Length: 148
Length: 172
Image (cartoon, rainbow over the protein chains, first blue to last red):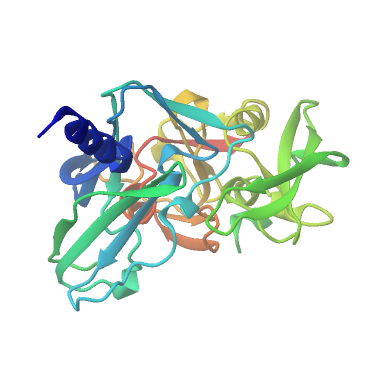
């Protein structure tokens, strides 16, 4: 591959590579009454060479959404994840240096109404709105055994 | 009877409301309204939000009885405004096992933020501890979601995941 072709390909890759990556993974969390089931850890990483700033008025998680596919293979999540927060008077900024990560714990089935829950396997796909686009995390599977 | 219906000394001096400007809350469906400055009965000033429809409010509007405002519901903002109300009109309930119906729960966030609050409707103490059990119930208005009564379990670790970082307060 000549230099021009290689550079063009790198340019094209960097053009489609979002500066922020979004990951979701199951995590174990201990609450005051023991382990909390179905928890996940969201990770946002600055994959660019420059600092990134996320301005928010409620929480950095206000731009997160969780789409959940239920045991019946249909989307059963409802509403927007970020709509559960309360606003501050003035915006705050989450600043991530190159390579820096922000993590937060989220309930993987947060957007699934209780009345729609039944035992089975759920697929959770997180997405994060940043600079007018959505970055998607790899889906995470959740096995729900008990429904309270 | 809801705890908000209990007779309490007012926090806000409604006659002092002064419009500051237009404001839009950044929910999926943006909520348009206005910001007002208002004096508390303690003399301190805070800023509050009133939606154009006069109905919309978020958690702090429910918790601090902003829904009783003449002319439409108002909500104090998370962070400094809520802290000002707490410091001047509330006292902490310690240990939290001493909480009673009508006390309020306020969650702590980074940088002094107060991301959520709710009214305790059914306190249940976790046996053998000085902590409230997740089976305790609260009256809550979670962001733009409808007002509802739910267990602390749903608020702390499931649909709303505000975590265990709450403190209990009671009116002075």
